[in-house]
Amino acid sequence: MKKAASAKKAASAKGASSKASASKASGSKTTVSKASGSKTSASKATASKTSASKKAAKGAAVRKAPAAKKVVVAPKKATARLKGTAPAKAVVHPPGDESPTALVRRARRINRELAEVFPYAHPELDFENPFQLVVATVLSAQTTDLRVNQTTPSLFAKYPTPEDLAAANPEEVEEILRPCGFFRAKTKSVIGLSKALVEDFGGEVPGRLEDLVKLPGVGRKTAFVVLGNAFGRPGITVDTHFQRLVRRWRWTGESDPDKIEAAVGALFPKSDWTDLSHHVIWHGRRICHARKPACGACPIAPLCPAYGEGETDPEKAKKLLKYEKGGFPGQRLKPPQAYLDAGGTPAPPLGAG
Image 1 (cartoon, rainbow, N blue to C red):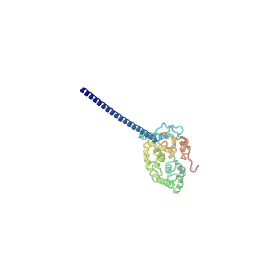
Image 2: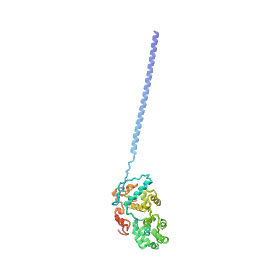
Image 3: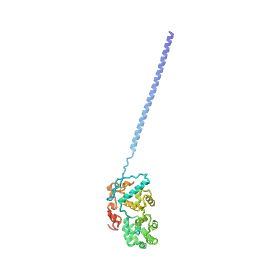
Image 4: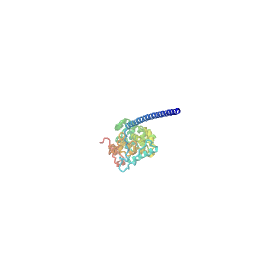
């Protein structure tokens, strides 16, 4: 009996111990579950914060984004051509990293297009011989060719040869040249170059660059005008119009006339240089002006990196055209027949109109 009671007590103690262990295990599980729930809540809170942060950043990005810039695209066709000439073939957008080969092709295409627009391009100074041309070119500094053309008839009527002008009374020459501006300095130059022609070249205008630039008032620009138009020897005339346009077209970034001459000359065959100068200068005088380029009436707009700097509306741009393009007289009193046939009209003499 004692043994049986002892066994019952042992079994009861063992059961109690088992229950206690089970209870402890259950408590442990509950603790883990609570901890897990706590971590889940923290994770959800973090995710919520991250989502809010992303939304705020996205909203800020939307608010800070700049307005889209309007892109001006050059038209596919020219609007300022003469009757019967072909329009530009296609739109070409010169890239910022244009290769030397691509630049040569674009530059030559521009010259071809301008040759179609200005087939009658010529020097816009009236002259009948090399002497008259070199004097007129010296006088054209800081004034218009028109004003020179209106002034030289009186000058050459009184002093037709270098010998005559070399022996002239400076005061009388000054009076004739007064309308050209800077008349005292110009009088000194034309009398000085006339004396040099008489003393050093037998009264004849030399046909070499190195000789021409030795004459008073004659630089490379004047020398190339004379060589190209009086002697038929190729040269590039880098005047203000030429400088402005070749930089707009990104043919060169140079600003020094001699460097511009070298850079542009490298893009073209030498035989093209004189006509190229006429085409570029004519375009600069008639369409691609310094302050208000007539972009909307430009025949080479598809090839121009600077398209959009001026007026792009075709109707408004047409009102900016000058000389024969705008229906006005040209600069020469005696222009070539080809110019007259194309619709150009002679300039009026001094004092007329």
